[in-house]
Image (cartoon, rainbow, N blue to C red; front, side, top):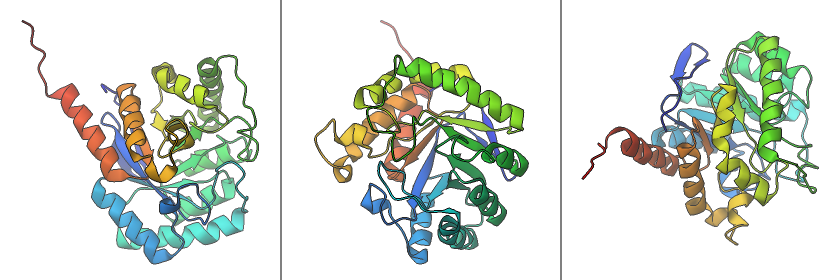
Amino acid sequence: MNLQPYTINCRGQLLDLSTPMVMGIINITDDSFYAESRSRHLQHIIDKAGQHLAAGARILDLGAQSTRPGAATIGVEEELDRLLPAIHGIINHYPEAIISVDTYYAAVAEKTVQAGAAIVNDISAGELDRDMLATVARLQVPYIAMHMKGTPATMQKDPQYEDVTREVLDYFIQKVAQCRAAGINDVIIDPGFGFGKTLAHNYTLLRNLAALHLLECPLLVGVSRKSMIYRLLNTTADAALNGTTVIHTLALQHGAHLLRVHDVREAVETVRVLQYMNNNLQVTTA
């Protein structure tokens, strides 16, 4: 967990990612795969934000569209109708909160950043809206670019790779170059666990996660309660917290800078334990 000293500029707040940080998920949806993460009423959203911040989240990730396989798609206006009141409500109650918006629409990115969001989190890395990279560059906010094979509707229909780690790395070499050419200063890489990958692909990527440090960008890992955990353990998303913590531990040991999670307290505790192990114990020899 000796991380490279990256910083990202979030509307004038510099976040030092040399210590891993936790991003708390707030889904403003009716159909996200984990029911406990869904929040449609404004007060519930504000309360969830307060709980995440109190538990140690440094970033709140707001998403108004479920991206689970087969989920219904909503348009720009409906995303904005869900996101803008949530952003205003959170900022009114927690002015120092750093909000990330999970969207693949450039128009949503623009309006939500104007409303106070500080990070754009795009599952398509600009592939679903060709205006996204130029928009983020103009907004001058950090950009989370995720790898996804296909679209949310098609991504889990027999995804194929010759070498998943090499192909994801090659994809990001090109994508980071595109982001830099567009004028985006802070690019964060998300390998896209569960997005166009089989169980074996996901765990191969996890085992080889350190290879992505060749990109010289902060690394985000989003595995919280996903099917790569609960299907392996023959359980459900509701019962996948223990497996999630195991994967978070492995991801941190392989150099993850950000964890995107449903359960903030448990993730923060995982970071603290590993930090102590790395930074405060002296090695002794007989």
